[in-house]
Image (tube, rainbow, N blue to C red; front, side, top):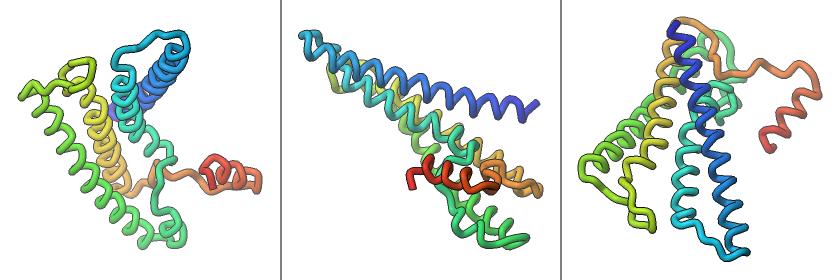
Amino acid sequence: MIRTILDGLYLLAGYLAGLFLIVIFLLMMGLSIGRGIGVNIPAGDDLASWSMAAMAFLGLAHTFRSGEMIRVGLLTDRVKGRTRWLLEMFSLVIGLGFVGFFAWHAVQLTYDSWRFNDMAQGVLAIPLWIPQIGYASGLVILFIAFVDEFLHVLRGGDPRYEKPPATTAEEVVERAIQSGV
């Protein structure tokens, strides 16, 4: 049951990131077309930048679990057995430390913005904690994904964020194209 909930959380965060991508597209198109016809979207730039931050951070956990995040594969793919497991564990511990640090401080910043009633300085004066929720929750969900993966690998499971090796030349080329190499 917990596995279903966690996978659903990662997928929901990915969908929310996609939704914010659509919001960015609509805002940018509205701003571009509006400029030509003399219509202004008040605080459009602010809304687009807040949406971009939410999109980027909410998409992290889904990206991590899909095996699309940059990792130390060049090193880990060269070793096998216990050495590989130790290297994976070391990498996950380092990742847990960094992500935990950033998630903690992002939540603290969002809480402080709420506590002190910080307001945005742009055209649209809204409480800053509202747009900060996107990046803070994205980092918390990524931290949960790291803890989830750490416990899975610690119990002896293969990392779920790892894609299986390519079996055909076409698959190697397709992965290289997708990664931008």
